[in-house]
Image (cartoon, rainbow, N blue to C red):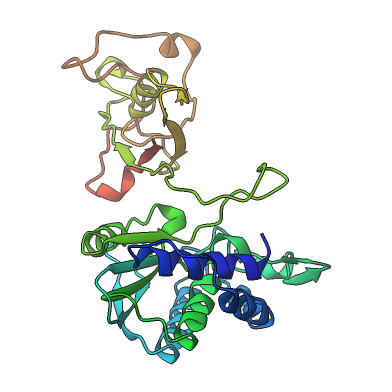
Length: 330
């Protein structure tokens, strides 16, 4: 979708969301959107050059400074909110007071999926009618559309809303783990919420579209606790956390239930690696003859199975951080 069309669609949606009547497309808005295209490209260039991966606190701080300054220039009252989990970067929230009756909310995110240094190998570039750069579509393009749509509507004198709130969060690519509840709380106070995530475009999509709903994610953690024992003297007393975790995962091995509209996927597994193997941590290191690995007894308490790989030392950890999570998305 061309930038001018995206701007026109965004501006039209905002006007429509606050109005009780449908109206024909405003040619003045179309003309303004087309004229704004060079400025949109400049905004994209500025933001893409700010590397802002979900764990890049410094880069996210720069993005927060940039977007907050842009919102203030549009006349918004702004605030920063610290995310409650994750890297601890700031959300940027801007609000406008209007003369209408509806409360509108626009959301986009400042973080990308890329690690710091990505611009060294994937620089910003323009190739004909296409622009390339890390995060340019997801979701710095969405931020640009919000900022420039608001400017177009401000210049047109449009204030047909009671309140208009803009929220830019720094952790969407990791599940909005520290901002999701804040966004949900804000959204509950509004009549309409529009998300400026990119949608599938041609040639993948048959035509341009407005997505009315999308899948969400939920993250669950399986935390398996093993039991240490001496591998040579009493291997039967040990419980290997990794083996039990494997049994748990085999009960639902990343099944995708597309027809029902639900999907469960294994996202990642983390474990702590040690010089000495310990069944209380989730890693694999074989140190024993095959007959040890074939041993299995009934699970203690119905929850733990005897593992194939026992430790040769009976130490245990008092640090919670040794037990890394296995996360699922569904």
